[in-house]
Length: 365
Image (tube, rainbow, N blue to C red; front, side, top):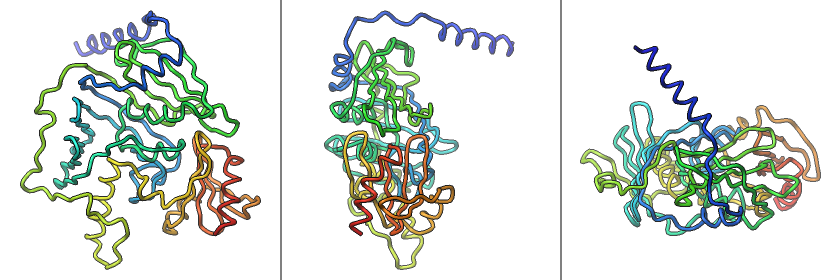
């Protein structure tokens, strides 16, 4: 019986994979982009996946030391469930033996951790992340990002050296979608295309994939199932449990506590990570200077502890240039220079794309 069920599953998957591509109304790439970038007020719920591999370890994403990451996204493979209806939204990160939930209730968002029953109240951002380029756009988003939220930040780059293309339509979460491509038209970008699966009926982005020169998919956010029905109000109801420790995110200190009370510092870092999981890492990472914009934006920062820089440069190679001597780390989606004065210059560009910013930064410190 079990063998029959497994065989049935394989047969069903094979039929779904083999089905013909959908026949959709003819639209231009610009028209599909307009559909996807428009507001999407439809109530909805569904399951989603987020896969992130920037090749920078903890420094690349929000799972590392508070304030030390380049972008707001979570690292690794994450599965979540989403409910959304107007000003109310809930995302539940599904983890083994625990759960983290983000309850957006209008102007307040509650981050609840089932483990240790910890809650942080954060003011809901009132505007989309104000990014001038790829790095600040990625740094300004939430930890678990739905495809439509991620697509909105890439659309901010639409008018900056970007070519729009349409690929053959396909299915995402069993729904017909247009496949819209945003192609950087710059010689130094390590990103070759951002592909967005746009729901043919509603225009909602159902899938976002970030492709690199090396052939890897650095980021992918997609719905695996979705329904456009009004979720029950109980999905959004949240009151901190009586035993929960509740922290006001507006009162969380941004600077380290050097008093020697490690518990107090741990609690501060945990609460700050909760705040950044809602607002993005812009406020702390961006003790920061950015150079350039669009796909070529480069970020420069300092102030990381020496052990974190040692960890970053463990596999780096020594290079020289107009900026002096530096350590260069290359991944499929990022190049990163650690300069002799301790500054870090990074971007989703080739090493040549870092050189002007590194030279400028080295000369001003």
